[in-house]
Length: 418
Image 1 (cartoon, helix red, strand yellow):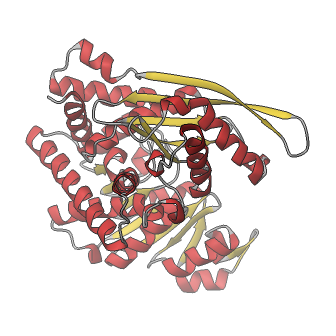
Image 2 (spheres, rainbow, N blue to C red; image 1 turned 30 degrees about the horizontal axis):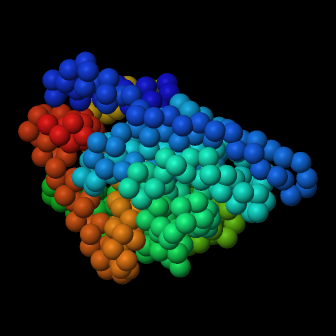
């Protein structure tokens, strides 16, 4: 099922709860504007290449459109539309004054040089620049884009408008007005939300165990933070496989090896050969990538890909808490099964909104001309995420619904201002 269909289903549930009219439902599920362009660049080796590009501006009822730009060969209008819709919900859940947008270019960045990627970035701004701006639509990094490319886009935009405009885009290098803490904000925000839920339920982190699917930026930071809280991290997985320990994973060592060698398997294995004696001593196993989802833990953290918990495997999930750091890791049908079992699913639109929250802080600092320090970013992010959790949890409790249903209902009511 397509991501946008998941969004529709969640909106319909919330709309029923709120008693929304058909007109309101249509408004909430229809993008304001879908922009399309073909970006043509000159290649280093000669000749040209053309890449389809998109910018979907979904809803700006609460403020300027906000959302990243991804460079991915499979980027298309449907995917970008779904992600733009989710951004509108996220911004409303954490109550920041942004709407939702998303951008994409159907390009394989691995096949282009850095110079060619810069050309794509500049071409994107030229194609959509009239619809972008600090008070219209504020882009940011996403899949396969980074601070460097955001800096390139900022300079191209400033060339077009003829004056400095640091608030045009977020996720920039610090030297160009970026903000400290943006690289870890998604996981940081998720753990703030998790800590609030644990406190609500009188659960001591030191008595809990966790499994983390994904050892990239967000998954690795989540592992570090959970370990620092005292949670026993039993398993970590990436595309190479799942590293599962009867006791606990040495998070620092494992992620250091992952960084150096490219996989969590490398903690015990070289190619297909594994150190059986060390694994036995450490009570460790190296299993397929999806095994992490089924580990016997208290907290499961999907921090990798979408549609990981589905109807065909949801019965194998044993965790009591699912913290969705990835976008859309649980299908609606599987989510319903987990809800009936009493599993607390902290939905992506709440738990991974730390990234856009710190992007908002960057926009604020650019608007004011001041620079926020690490402590200020940390404190404001903690406050924002804990307040958002409180709003969602209280709404869920008062209506006897799940956290996801509450997050959507609360967001829609804020977008409609009712």
